[in-house]
Image 1: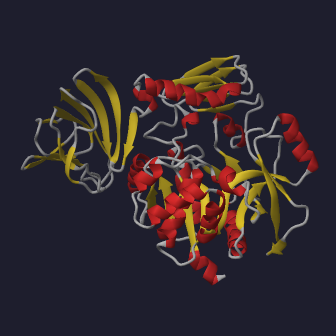
Image 2 (image 1 turned 180 degrees about the horizontal axis):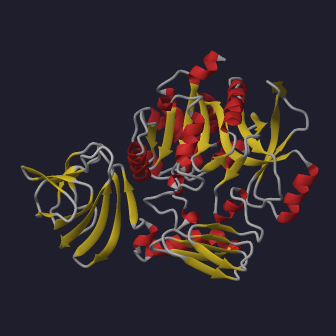
Image 3 (image 1 turned 135 degrees about the horizontal axis):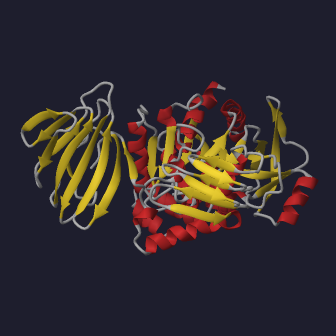
Length: 474
């Protein structure tokens, strides 16, 4: 048992942006950083449920460069220390390349590591049970099996893939049945899903896997030889960007597991939910007597079976049925439940038209605090900035804009060129274009809030030249 624990590595897949959860999720605020069930994000919960079993130093997040930086800064701002490791893909190519890249990276660190692969955006109600089953799965994986967790279906769901197992278990370990997988089944029709539940022996595919790094690479070699060749080129020092440029997107399920004969399943008795779309909420939150899920400042009259989510503004609804309403300070979604998969198309249209709402929220979290864009026009931008106690922004300058700072609450320690000053509420200062400056909150208890007025020929976030930064940003 101790040998298995020493070789366990967590691999969290966090490359997706969760466009089906727009407008809550954005390019710079992906789904895995949403707080849907409390104060912690889906990613934080995923890390947390692994840490009692796997030290954070052996937890790896696989993501793209943009999301990797957002995630790193977010976790630093939340005081997460030490941080998980990062494995960066140049572009997303689905789960098979991501898992293959993680496998070759882990083999650089350990002779025969066992990978625990999890998506970053699932809900698990009973983490201790998950960890206990991972221990069982790891022992099975030592024998060369590719182990997956199957969810016993509670309804005829057409949005999940299914896994069919043999009737008799391969073995029992610690009172847990290990089943041999007969086949994977694509998302079924409603009629077929009902038959699966009636027949038994079918499970939802949870997307959580346990296997040896060498075992999954051997399977990729057998069933995805072109991908394997490119992974070996990376292993031997070749360009990751060049290899990924020629990779075909393919999931680990369709590319490998549907073809492999050494796949085993353990029933996932840990309370699993997939956050795939807005309709997933009905499996996480308890609806009211009318079947509604309502969050935030909402006044509703006579709606049924609807999701109504508000943030800052008051939202009033009357007589809705099977409708989703998601209101944020800068964008609102109103959608039939039957069309939730089309939310991604809205994001694609926003992107093609150059609308900022696909990319960023009005309020943006940073490791030092947050800022909210109050107004933005030609040649100017007005922000409300909040700096948490004992935090400071980078030492920086801007080439194309000047800034006026007005303190609303707290005290601000300001470096402007060679000058250092402190100012309080109703006091202000001016930062000329091209002058190094830094904003700091020296208080140990009280947040600092200021209004920042930017003026110049260009007022976007990339007009920042950093010289020193507590959070190692470039």
